[in-house]
Amino acid sequence: MALKIWLDGKLVDHADAKVSVFDHGLLYGDGVFEGIRVYGGRVFELEAHLRRLYESAKVIRLEVPMGKNELVAAIKKTVEANGIVDGYIRLLVTRGVGTLGLNPFQCKNSSLIIIADNIQLYPEELYETGMKIISATTVRNHPLAIPPQVKSMNYLNNIIAKIEALDNNVPEAVMYNHEGYVAEATGDNVFIVRDGVIYTPPVEAGALEGITRNLVIRLARKENLEVVEKNLTRCDLYICDEFFLTGTAAEVIGIVEIDGRIIGDGKPGPITKRLRENFFEYAHAGRK
Ligand code: PXG
Image (tube, rainbow, N blue to C red; front, top):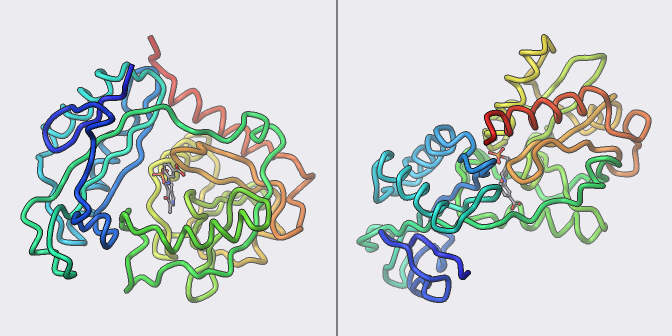
């Protein structure tokens, strides 16, 4: 069965889901997006994702061409039309069709696209063995550039860092901010554990306020684990006891080596495993 894509108010066949070459999303990366999981037929943390979408749009002065309730209905309709039980939603709002100039206000109507599909995951084995990563030399966007809090369609900063990772035969890279503190990974948030305390960079260090990050912080605190948001250095990453990343695609994944330094005993640590299990239980709770 061909995928049905939500495109500007209706479901169309995959083959007909096309946008104009004059869309400023294509011309300038002018737009915002969300990546959302579907677990057991339920759209995961939808409220939080929508909040971030509308906030990202507000920052770049982009109008989401639908109210929240209408958008929720469109998302659910797209998920159902494609029979997605466990999958992934990519929601985009582009600036829409305009002229070749930068001026976004020449674009009369923003465009809303919803894709519901299966998700490309890291191999299951990587969750058992843990992942090796590197530090990227590419610095995360300055807060006065494209703010890292905005989930914009302009991902070149992260893509260049991702290329550094791939060139080094690892799947992810940690990005540091202009002050040298840890910001986040190219598509995931960073957590470490030292002496039983969990640390993660504050959002103002240049991190996207990850939905998975916030959930994992809540789950950890429910376990009476201490979670501290503070600036982390590259050295902090090298000497921690445990290291993990969180994200919609990765969920919770242990890191066992960075820049040639082995973390802990070279396997995902106990707190990492516990939080991964708690995340799994939370995501699959109430499954039919
Ligand atoms: N930082 C960045 C830069 C991201 O793009 C996260 C952190 C984690 O946020 P969430 O809200 O997902 O916990 C992201 C999210 C993919 C993919 O296909 C990447 C993301 C989301 C979905 C899919 O690589 N990144």
